Length: 286
Ligand code: BTN
Image (cartoon, rainbow, N blue to C red; front, top):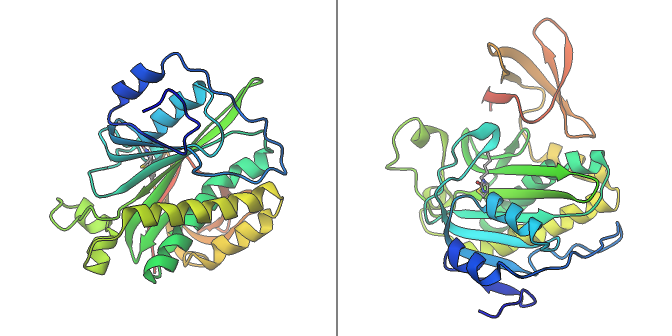
């Protein structure tokens, strides 16, 4: 491997080897303007095994890697889901993170997780003709089982502003012999299709779909993204159970707001907006 990241693909066998080789490198960050066409996946770091691709991506941000850099690993030992849940990431799944770094408005930023969910749903529907749906904010579901999820981590300071968007897609990692409740809550593409899928093709399709949806956000077509999310979900106007910090409560999911918040009506008729992070919706009538 050359001591440069100009090459489109950087193969890394282990974290340590990569950082030993690149510890003294300085990468330059493109000065992105809003009108730039995003170049997602121009630089790809491939690892056999990492803690979490999101963590590696954050380290690469500090080294100055540009927007669009992708980190992919065959397996993760400390894969994370939303609300600090463990994300089981054995070999066979598609685990990758995309670095986004440019100054965008808070309303654009809040739609990035929504956009990411739309992009995987599009990719899976297009490649395998499976009618996967979105459960707010961005769980990709096959019926009542989860097939993929997104973990977006952001940081905004005077000097820098970035988001790392982590995609977890259960591709060829079967849940059939996993213990309950995992076996009943999760499913993989190979479990559904009865044969293995091409992981590289799935990643390319996901990156390409994400580039398109992200471009809509950057060109202020936020309404398009919200409208598309609504066509890909079947949870609106249905009863849901909302888990917040305290006891769960029943509500009806009414709409997705322009900033990605879920509008709900509680059983007492109170209208509320839910934001990602401290709530989860566990049971949906489908
Ligand atoms: C969720 O639904 O809770 C989000 C799951 C996100 C998992 C992906 S796998 C790649 C990236 N690295 C992580 O540690 N998590 C995300």
